Length: 156
Image 1 (cartoon, helix red, strand yellow):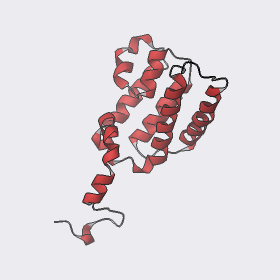
Image 2: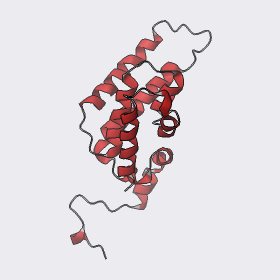
Image 3: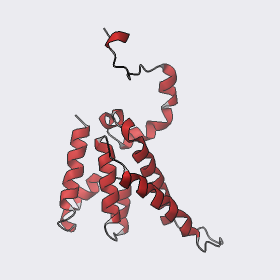
Image 4: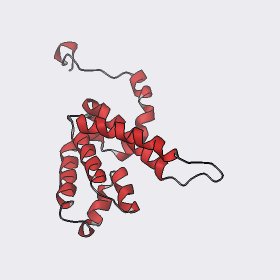
């Protein structure tokens, strides 16, 4: 039986209200292993910066709207991306997910990639990377292995 005296000082006992407040994160649960979600609070700033970064890249890469003057419109995305990268680069991750995000950012920033590869990086799509392993240079193979290892650690 769990009593107040057996809980750690920072322990939180969920209520119905906290479960309902968490409903908007249900979509994230589909993309991130459940064990990892339980241990991501220490990297909330990394995860938030990653989400903003991905949204900025998706907007930047989306087709232009016809009949709209977009001279310099792409310049609005780069400050957001740069700020997100600064947060991610400066952070010391506390969870496997935080480290994984840092690796994806490093990989994404390391070279000019084809559209399919860039989409895989932004989706953190390890399956794509594993299926196309033979098309990558040697420097990418240990990165794929590191991401695979981090995911295994997060699922324990």
